[in-house]
Length: 148
Image 1 (cartoon, rainbow, N blue to C red):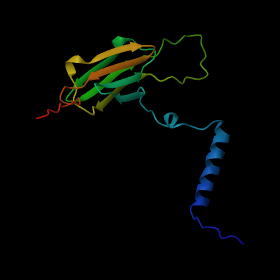
Image 2 (image 1 turned 30 degrees about the horizontal axis):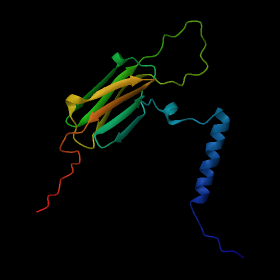
Image 3 (image 1 turned 90 degrees about the horizontal axis):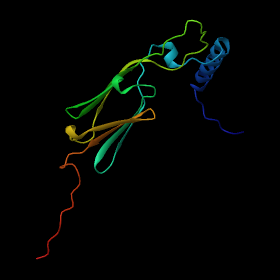
Image 4 (image 1 turned 30 degrees about the vertical axis):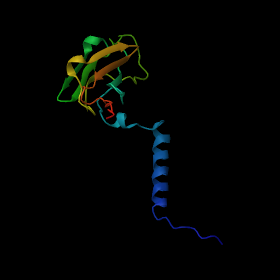
């Protein structure tokens, strides 16, 4: 006979899984957190760093450059804007609306000091790319060795 480890909470988790399945079957599909709460929309963002720059890529498809604002203050980058819903057609019957709309604001504390006056932002194929050059004192400098 094999020895089995007793896990008292396993049965509770099993009951929770069964209740989740019951609700999923009854309502037709599992509910996501967004459906239960009125969660604000915000774009997905990647933050990376090279030797000379901090680079931020944000997904903002379908937006015009006039609807997005980028600002830097006290080593904090703020990306804000509004994605407006397209004009609804009177004769259209929508079966599902999954795209998110509304105002957003995201702020990021930058990992290193940057040159705020040299920040560049470009927008192509739904991706906003923000390039933030590092200050000179942050960049690694090679120190020459003199021989005496």
